[in-house]
Every structure is written in C-alpha cells, then in structure tokens.
Image: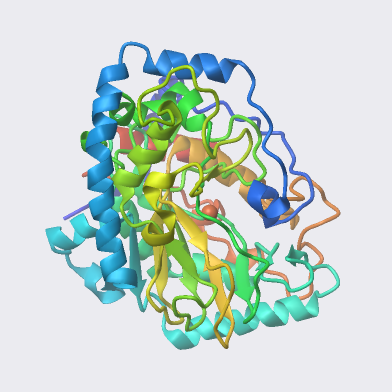
Length: 480
Ligand SMILES: [Fe+2]
C-alpha cells in the first residue's frame, strides 16, 4: 500500500538547501514569441531557406568524431541492414504495426511483450480514453467557441483553417484535466526510467497547453513533412542533451536507451529561441482524437522503428557520400538553428521515407495517440476523407523542476488570458483569449496539473530520492 504525506515544513527547509544541487537548462525566461502560426515552426511550410551554420558547428562535428572514426563506421555498417529489415516489416504490416490497447487495460499491468512493442515502435494508440459522446461534445464546444470569436481567432492555413491558435477553450481545458487523460499520461510516463537521483516524478503529469486541429476534407495546406520535435542542432551541441545519445555517438547504437530520462530533464532543447520549441520536456507527444479518421484522411504518419531511425539520423551528418565516416563534411542534414529536425529522402535516403512512414490506424472520437519525443512523424499531405479530422494536442509532461518552471509561466499566461509562452504571440497582451466570448472560468476549471489550486504535490513512500526532490522543488517553485 502506498501512503502519501504532505510536504512538511522541515522537508521544505531541507530542499531549500538542496536547490542548487542540479542545474536547470539555461533558458531565457523573459523572451517573447513573434506573431505567426504553426508554419513558423517548419522551414518546409513557410518556404524559408536554410542558412549556413556558424563555423563552430564544423569544429563540433570534428570533435565528436575524433578518435571514434572506426567505431562509428562499423556501427553504421551494422545499422543499415537492420534498418532495412525494419522498413520491410513496416511496409508489410502497414498501419497495424502501430500498437493499440484499450484504456481499460491500464487498470492492470500490461504484458511485458506489449510494453516492449510500444517502446520499440515509439508509439501507441490507447482506445476509448474518453467516451465518444464526450469527445464529440468537446469538439462541438470548440467549434462554437471558434464561431463566437471568429473575428479574433487565428489559424493556419488562413484561407482554410486547420490548426487553430487556441489554447484555453473550456473544452481543451476540460480534456486536459479529465482523470482518464491524466491516467493515460501517467501510464505513458511510466514506460520511462532514470537514475534514482534524477529529479523527476513520472507519477505526476503536468498540463502542457497546446493547440487544436479541425482539418476539413480536401485540405492540403497543413502538410507537415517528416520531422522530430525537441530542437535539432541542440541534440549535438548541448552536452547534456547529447549525453542522451552517447551510445549512438560512440558507435554502440544497439544499446541506446530511448526511455532513459536521466539527461533529458536537464537538456537544453531550445538554444536558439526556436519558433516551435517546447519549454517543457515532453516524454510523449500526443493527441486526443475528436473524429473518426482513417489513414489518408489528414491524420498522423509515423516511422515506427524508434531506435534504428534515431541512430540513423543522429549519425547521418558524419557519413559521406561514399557511406564512410567523413569528419570534414559540414552541415547537419535536416537540422537548422531554431527549427525542428526535418527528414527528407535527399538527406536521409537510408530511411526510405516513402516506405518507412506509415499512417496510424483508424481512430475514433475519444482515442488517444502518443508518440515518443524522438519519433519521426508527419501529417498526411492531403485530407482525402469526407469528414473533419480533429484533435486536441495533449503531450505527456512529467513533474521536473524545469517543467514546473515552465508551468508557472504558462499559468501566469493562462490567468492573464494570453497565449502560452511557447507559442506565436506570447507576451503580447493584444492577442489571446482573455476577452473571448465563452472563455474559461479559472475559478472552477484550474487544477494542480495546470499549476492552479495551490494543493501541492505529495511525496509518496515508494518514490526515489530524485522524485522526492522533484516534488519538493516543484512545490517550492509554485509557492505551495
Ligand atoms: Fe511535430
């Protein structure tokens, strides 16, 4: 049995003396975000030309390879045939390769084989997280909110909106705080582990406020190509972020562990104030489905071979045209300052993206889709279905000191009716939902996961030293 104890005053005092033990990634907290929309995030959506990288990146590449040329070369040779086999399997199985489980299965431990499959594919569909009727109600409520505030709502593409710059509609807030969503997030976070001293509690999901999508049939404007979020060059340049990939970069990709959060909690995933960067560490990205949507109907596409794909695109910048390690090459394919990691057939031929990217299976209202923070994902180029393809974006963000810092800033934006700190228009009081008709009432809607309510997180007896520290520091940051 677990017993819970509230943080005592002496414990608070103890943690105050420990607060400098770790360092939270250096982030410019006072920044603002220029106006824009989701196309700001993707060089491929907004037509921006990639700029040449500063000279330090050539030196970085040389230093990462120095003395490891043979190990990296050998590991690349081992990787290619394994990757090929994975892609053959993806092609053979199609959408069914993405694991699906029912929400009710989370009430007891899942078979080890199921967990292993979810981890290997870096993705999962959890069915029936919300009743379909509730999910449809949340969608119609959002549509009513959009209609009521039509002159103020921003969206992309402007001519045929698909992704709305809306973050605080009552429906989104209700979905994020639904117990089944929180249970789903806890489950997803439980697939990760870290060293006992890492300040993280996966049992406590935090709310990350993101957009919503209502994509209509025929749309071809919101066509995101294959990419990975969480920055791009940062994975090589930031030493803490890079430590997460140390096995890959030392020529041992087979032992890379994509579910070890030890370094991620302090990694700097946004060194260049990227337009689409998330201030929170998202273990999983995800969305709640609000529609019946089949492959090809404007939905998500994934590359469901997580470790192999990650090893490929992390090593790719070091490999020359002849398939050999070439320390003198410049550039990091698909990576640019302030942008996410983009993947393309030209830059990443070994991924065989035409075959390795697969649509997720058909989803129904109330299903939840999650993909790992390093997973390559994309959106159908065109929406060939007959009905809307609609989602609320809801990631799984654990309790860490850095995430609570971001949560506090997000809460301040929420209460002020402003755009959340990571999104276009943040810090600009002239935009936001503060004056919207039907806006959320924080007196009744705010929860602890959103940084509201003042209840504080609890230490539990089975927590690691690091999880306790995360709770203590989180409560301290929130003033609880
Ligand atoms: Fe993305």
